[in-house]
Amino acid sequence: ALDDSAASSTSVATKENQTMEQVIDGILDSFFSQRALTEGMSTLHQFSAESNALNQVDNITHRMNSEILKAQKLASVSAGVGGKIFVALTPNGDRRPINLLKPLYMNELRNFRRQFLKWIAAHPLADGAKEDRIADVYISYVESQI
Image 1 (cartoon, helix red, strand yellow):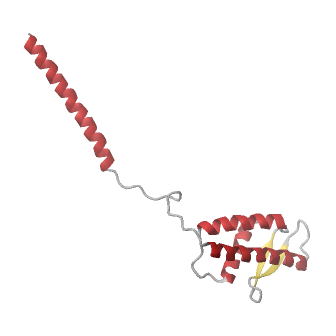
Image 2 (cartoon, rainbow, N blue to C red):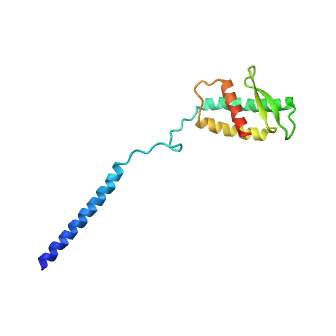
Image 3 (tube, one colour):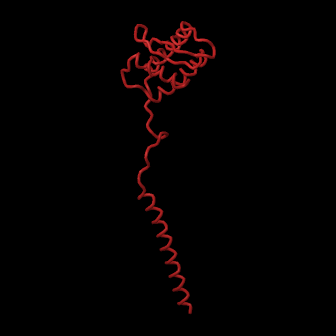
């Protein structure tokens, strides 16, 4: 009877070991058989713009803010009404119309500029983007914010 109990205990232990091995194999297989994760917005490689490019964008956006304020004064945009203004993209270049629903003030433009610089640092324009292209993108950004 002793031999039977010893044999049955070893067979139970073997079944438990096999079950444990199978469980471990199942866990290991789940690690190795999974497909690779795809990149999301948070895990994509961030390409940062060069500092001199950011300095150039900063100067252009500062000038564009001044142009917007000057164009509002020239067009006599009244408080709370807004209107259509024309902003020069380059000092001697084309003018671009902006439809304002309300007048823009310096503190609002300063916030837009700060937000745009953060955005452009994470999403740089193509290398060698011209001044008028950067100004146009900034004006489009301002229009989307108002």
